[in-house]
Length: 142
Image 1 (cartoon, rainbow, N blue to C red):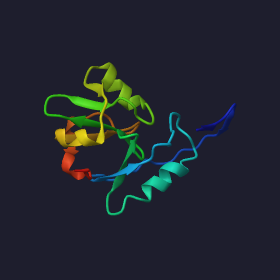
Image 2: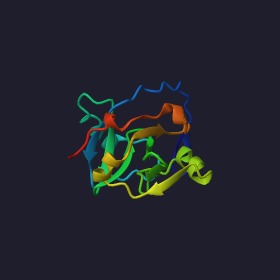
Image 3: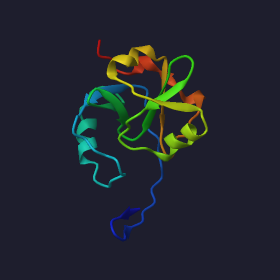
């Protein structure tokens, strides 16, 4: 649905989840995506920098935020954590937060090495531990 003051268009498209196993860290300290916008030009420009990786993991002011289409959560061996300051506070991120399955944490780039797994969630991808991926799929700054 595209809307401003009024509804401008309603469109239905089949959802085809992309297989994502690897993420490239990309920095953008100015990006703002606090609402779901039809204009994704800034995110698309960052996505073009992914190289041989499947997707990007956006870093703003040294804080891990989101991928190009998903919120991200990390497993440290005991608990699942999601970035305190995502670009977009998605509904599928909020559901496991409300249910106590995940917690919020300030996740800086350097702390990525302390996690074992990650998972991508969005409106079409629920929290499901069977979908977790190895943290080694994320490019690291050492």
